[in-house]
Structures are given as structure tokens and as C-alpha cells.
Length: 179
Ligand code: CUA
View 1 (cartoon, rainbow, N blue to C red):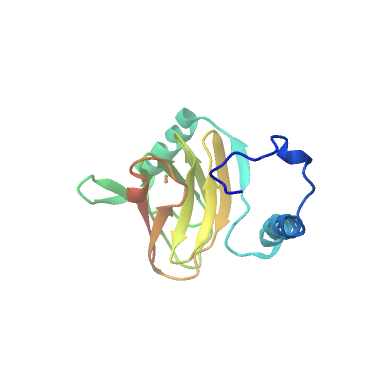
View 2: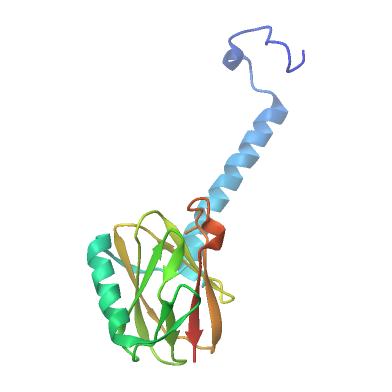
């Protein structure tokens, strides 16, 4: 019998399981379980996927806070789109918006100082991926994710979106300076 022809017996699920087939199903199942428990393991011991405090919010509420934050601490603008570069004082609340297809605003933080970073998505699921540090946080619409950050290395970082969010997903790149 080939795969092109219909099976000789229509009730294929009544056939006894072949040894090889059963072995592969068992291997696949065990591997699924390994992957599943690795998620729990990495959550506890991994350093990439950070756990955030999460609160309910709305795009309007969050945008109001982020705009007030930018209005207060903007030091200059960058790129043709005049994106504000916001340099908040240490120990303050920092706001970052993810939306189709940008991260807003550009942040400028000080090395060794601690900030409370608040993030939300305005429309769809986005992924905050800080490169090259390789720190990843899911940014979900309707939720405000809060995390304490203390940059330990100065430099220019990219914030890459790592959740597919549509046709211009690949252009959704932001910037973060650590001085
Ligand atoms: Cu936002 Cu992909």
C-alpha cells in the first residue's frame, strides 16, 4: 500500500499499533514533557526571561502616563521622526510603549542606577528583546508590566520585537542608551 491510495481498511484506528510507531509516539511524548518542564525550570533558574509584576491597564491610561513622563524628562530628539530621548532620574518610573511598529520613546539610563520600568502594548502582543544582553519580556495589550532594572554595562542597546506582530514586525526596533 502507498500513501497515494486510500487505506484498504477504512477504520484505520482499529488497527493494532506498530512497534516502531508506538516507539516514536513514546519518544515524542517524553520529549514534550521534557520541554514542558524546561519552561518551569528556566523560569526559576534562567536569566533571560524575566518575571514582571503585572497590572491591568488601558492604552489611554498608559499613554497618558508615558506622555507625561516624556514631557518631563526629554533631553533631545533623534532620527527623522523626532523620537524623544528621555533621560529620567535614578529611582524613577520609566515608561515604554510597544505598538505597530515601534518602541516609544528612546530611553537614556545611567549605569548602576535602578529604575522601575513600565511597559505595555497598545495593540497586539509584542516582545521586548534587549540586544545584545538577550533579555526577553512578553508585552501584552491591556497589561502593564513592571520590572526593576539596574543597567550594569554602558552602551547602546537595541530593543527588538520578538513576537510576530504583522507585516512590519522586522522594523520594530527601539533604542536604549546606558551612560
Ligand atoms: Cu512587535 Cu513584532
